[in-house]
Image (cartoon, rainbow, N blue to C red; front, top):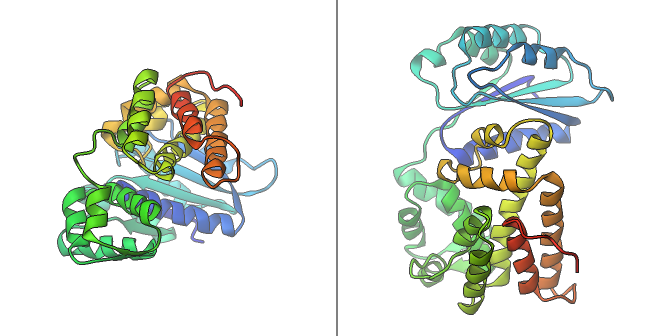
Length: 325
């Protein structure tokens, strides 16, 4: 591994997956510790220096996950980053994520210093024909073979939002398994005429609207929505909230955590913030365990009604007491 990685861009899915790939490779090479730092407008850059100079209690290799939401570290930040690049500490990997840089930032001394000692990864938008190729590759990686016009329809549906495309591919995989995906399969999956959808259910739960979540869940069941699809949406959100709640438990505010969460769309950040304020890390972990139980029930490995477990799960997200049994 290089001692420094810098990822820059404005596409959340690619940014997140690139950072995940680097962290996964680092973990495979023994980097078991991780410290998340967010350099906002009032960030004390001495914290980065202190973090770099601190020794782990267990002498473990670690990742410093530094996020710069504005992309502008300022004079103090630029100096601190350049000094870090001169003498990167051993057994430490610095992973920096920031938005797309303008011409001045791209030619700054601090970035050139980081690039000299590490790796700079620029994330570019995927548009036009490249978007069609990306969608087809994503489908095939999931074990799905797109039939005629499927890629074009999905590209039109997601309007350039790669995160939405990835969600639709995951849903198609859950609904139909591996194999050929026809235009009819896709139309059924993304039908705009559905009265209720799983994304709306998740949002209602994060808003804390217990009654509405129950009505929406019942509506999904009545419309024949597959239980694994509902669980996929709830488990995906619960997993994200678990990760963010861990940062809150370390002393950061929900607003700070959500502001730096690239995996959360901007328009959904207020909802996710509500969820972090409503439940703590222990409660989100309980919901993650409930997701596992529900998965086993759907597969017939537990003698419980999957839809009742799904109700406990989504109302628990909304703030209802999470009762055992």
